[in-house]
Length: 223
Image (cartoon, rainbow, N blue to C red; front, top):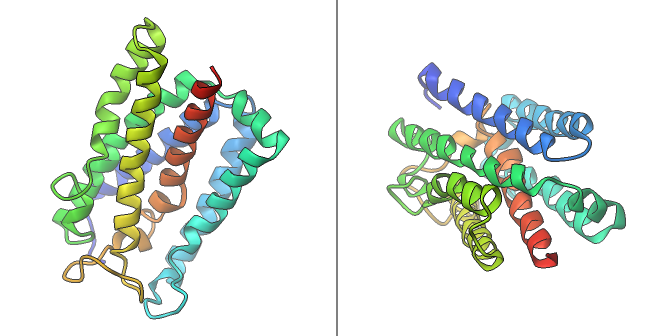
């Protein structure tokens, strides 16, 4: 991948650290949660730097490995008593405002597309409308949790729509990576997320965002 301007790396890393900070702060054990996320991020960064994810022709594809541990962790948190206790103790207000980080994420994706590191379909000029989630998050936070002017149905609906938006870009991203299962963007594959530090997008940022929506929906449905 060609060398990118330093500001692209800087904005992405600051966004990642902001996500870790806000997510950890929303739990009752911010220290251990932050450490676990940083360790997982470190493992994925080491794999990406080593070139592990650049073996495009291997089967099964190596890239989906970044999603295995987060997926298993999310399932365990929802199906175990200790996991549900952890979920139900989270601060749903902090989780809501955390979605504002999706704005800089989308800006970084746009920059990566300009530098031919990802396909245009992964930006707001293509099939990715996830920036809507980030732009509306402050409004949902203020009207839903500060002055309590939004109904529970609206909050549930917003979380469902925004969950769908992040799943949409995740699926398009996976199917645009060079691999035997690639379906899109053959003229400009999704290569940036195979490299440090952008591997943290599928390895940490996207799973955390998905988890936060699922937590919020559980809390709202429980009343």
